[in-house]
Length: 363
Image 1 (cartoon, rainbow, N blue to C red):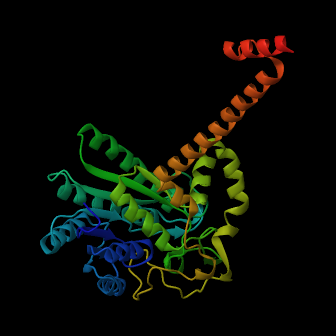
Image 2: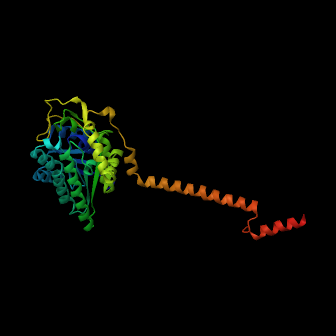
Image 3: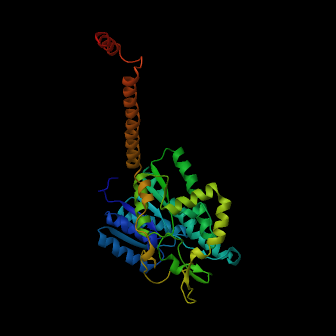
């Protein structure tokens, strides 16, 4: 599909955070966007933003932990906007707590939303896309899909499960030679409202691990992945470092997180005892895409630019290699020529040797 075609896009978790920013990004491109989330206020705000940006939007209150609701939402989007071209799974919830203090019901709820919500969305997307053998599914993942950290065991486990589920799907679609593409976009710490409404047992307010990025950086990556069929896309240097650390020095990473993982996820302000959380029900207000950390959040990622411009990077590297080769071998050839002239190398052309001999005889 070309950049000028109006796509039909579904985004789960579209009422806030990365989902909100992603829906808005597709709206800027003129897409017709189905917005799925629980909170009416956030859905209404997202709808207004998309329409103001030039897109169309359909807000559908949906709990992604219920497959019937997701399936019905997909059918409604297709009735209103036509076949689904892109499906973005982004809905999530979490609990900040040590494992020993967690309730089984909390693990169940986080898993239902943050893992099974992705499964339900993927199944609905495949029902639409496989008969046509086209479309793109983007799973919004995390560095924590590779490496668990303290205080977020339920969320980390759900992201690990999502990654395993998606890897199974990769192989199945490859076996069928399907043109339905699936991508995972793994994110760093982001400045989103989740830290203001996540359920927590921490003494201080939760916060993202720094360095922090704006959700629009993630949205750009998701939109790029939807068009470019990249198996996995890492956003931000911290994501890459975390994944490499787990691969090569996992035990060292255990010790590092034991020392730093508690303080790095808590702000200086104590938790408000009356704060609302969204584990079971949505918080009844529109908090937009961004959280309270605008001043320290990065608005771009050089690493992401390099990852999404491989041809440019490869071309530059290739050009530099050619130039370096010419400088090296050209200089070496010039040095050999000079050496030949100075030392009378026997490999010089015969005519040059004969001419020098004649001149010597004349003298």
